[in-house]
Image (cartoon, rainbow, N blue to C red; front, side):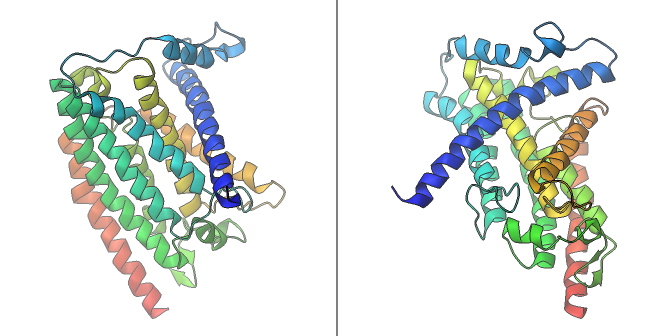
Length: 331
């Protein structure tokens, strides 16, 4: 076995452990945060501050029997949760947490992550179609239309950043922002040019990250008040658990990409924090804002959600792309 293959296998194992740990304790953090926002008790019985609740919930899910309802397409029904989780795990392998901590750096890392993200979208369609449930089918159609609508402005914004950085290598994008927070892509002064719309690009990418994770106020794919539980209505045990883990893994990936593309990655403006801890601080602050937004804003309608992308975010991201191309050509 070659050393490179061994490194990738070890990186995948670490990514699975990291995703499982995040899924467990981000659920705890979200339940505690939601309780604080709604002024009610959160998990506080099992262990100090309820810290033993996530592993107990995990054991409960793994102990339950995996039931397959009659009349479903068994192959697609069983493949959908795996398709939801596998791309997220693979994406972790290419994410650089510092200049030394990366599973397998690739020159086309950003393209690889978005390619795997599209496979994750297919898992929602497979889950809804194979369940033979009208609520699940309606949910999968919503989820796919939402994914298509928000991947377009997200990719256009990424192209803008790639044009400024001159590379699709995630580590190269971070290294182009080194030297203090004023070099980060979120600020208008970058690469010798003045682009006043970079903050808008950050907001567009952040909004699309929220929508891609199917969370409120963009959770039209689940919409419990309308569609029972959406595309995973018929799933229980670890089938549901894999969808749950994939959602929180995608939250971490979205926050990590936002940090890499706009917030300097592991760059520390003060110089005394190790890079990996600074990177983790940034992504968990972004995740905290994910939680805050979910429990603060109400769910929008499907038409309002699609109009936001097609009529506002896509034109703005295209305008910023053309402006950035013009500025790079001139300066």
